[in-house]
Image (cartoon, rainbow, N blue to C red):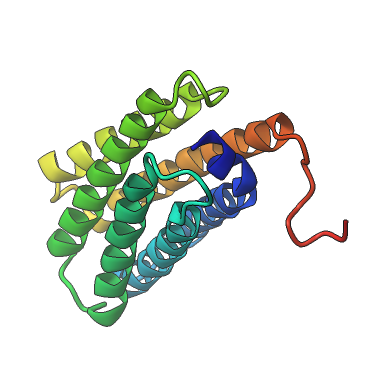
Length: 186
């Protein structure tokens, strides 16, 4: 699994960068309509899901590829739901985001614990998972906190998780034998 993650470090980097961009957009436009937020969230989930799906295909390692496949499918389903039905009410959107964050966080923690001896700095993935679960739990407990507050919370979550994924991906890149980008000429 470490080899698979190390080879696909750049997908985690893109995922982290996407999360930071999404979070910054939420901060920059706090008065976004809920429909725009839904579409932005849907696009982020689709990108997150496709990067996880891309990381799930085993290349000689078949031990835990299924967890990344499940994460990817969960994110794609959440993204498609948000993009196809942007007129969802704020409450339904927050519940979708909360469930997605809790599932994603739990799977990240499981993956980090399973790979803690083989992946350097696996604690970053645990912290990302804990942040996701806390964020999802907060949204489930306080769904009526208001759309503006929800935008700030969602933006904070996206930036924090994105920064953790960026650091994790760069640490993975540094630990692999060939740290070149897969698209760079060899």
